Image (cartoon, rainbow, N blue to C red; front, side, top):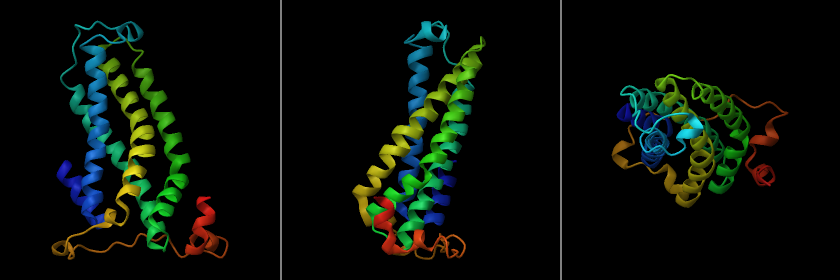
Amino acid sequence: MLLFAFGLMLVAFRSLVIAVKAILLNLLSVAAAYGVLVLVFQHGVGKDLFDVSSADGIEAVVPLLLFVILFGLSMDYHVFILSRIRETFDRGAKMDEAVSYGIKSTAGVVTSAAIVMVCVFAIFATLSWPFFKQFGVGLATAVLIDATIVRAVLLPATMKLLGDWNWYLPRWLEWLPRLEHYEPEPTSESMQEVKPAEFPAIVQ
């Protein structure tokens, strides 16, 4: 799964840095979910809140399911945000402007989706079966961390720090196909949004 995701990001964005960073950020979200599960269901931190015993342990299948679901959700967020940033950058905006515009234009959708998923997964944490309780706690915590700390803080921060290095591609990978990141031809009403000269105003 990691190799497939790496290859997909490499082809889609033609960037070795973006592909590597996507894997690392997604693994960070999964690791956070595993950490919460260990704290609650093995060390008993907050066990009264979730009505569990620290001796219950973690169901063997839970880490596997969490990895598959969380990695898919995290990659979905990542591609959605990066696509907007790359589109803006390709139209002539500076890196800082592209990152700011990409985050602002996707914040509403990402936040709304995260709220819905956290609420739904939190319901599983109220059930009596240990499997569903662990499943709900892990997913709700991971989605919350991924949508706030990882996507809203770490992703834009690393992109601003790296600047144009975000799009680094070695010469021996130049054979990769080029995928257009532009949207369909803009109408007269949307031209103000896509002109490079207008990006400073949008960011402000």
